[in-house]
Length: 249
Length: 71
Image (cartoon, rainbow over the protein chains, first blue to last red):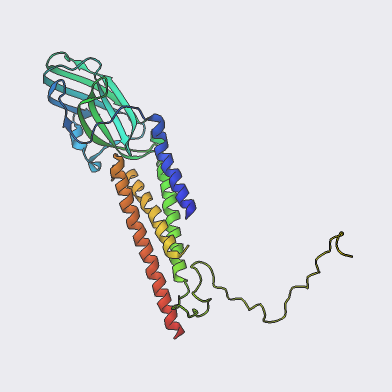
């Protein structure tokens, strides 16, 4: 069982480990659709994913996530309009993928359009899992946002993407998890088998039938050998201990 | 280690593995760390309790059966 726990920790490190190397220092926006009009007041802002007909608002749940096939990259088209104020230079559109509270990847692109006065703007951001796709598969949340140069979000909205692994054997994490699943199921079956063989525990003070007083721990056979005094001792007699050369003469 | 505690420990690990597998197969999003830890704790505790309870029930039945056979 301990080996399975260690393997589980290794699997967890395998899943989370790459994220530490790739994570960026950018702060992630909160989940869910939200509009933060700090500088410009957004009349509307929406993002289409891999085509004009796929608004990210339709993938706001894991069950309705966009499917990203192996080797396929995501492409997000940002469209926004603001009616007052301006968007300072250095602002960008970004896609951030978050997993277990860590930002795995961040893709950014500059904004195009009238930013210093009220009007419309667009941005196109390409998104790729990169080497993570070989280790990870599953549903991930991506936050699309329009950020200032300091990382503050003017507008953000989250959606889900289901990334498929490039191999038939699924991703490495799935293989490790399936091995752990089988190993732990076997451990549980072995524990139940041991419980079935547990010698009956007798009330205090009375020896259990066929076992030592108080029974024996589960999984260890009860001591049932012959008593030491019964029968002749089959072992040869031991020689007397040797005397030291400097001993009494 | 008794069979009951062994089964409960394996159940806890099994629960953590199950949460990861559900996420990998596309039914659960593990985005927020606190929410993910909540999922892990709940499912691991549930699986640990279920497996430990099953082992205790099996052990109790075996004990009752042995007691009846002794009579």
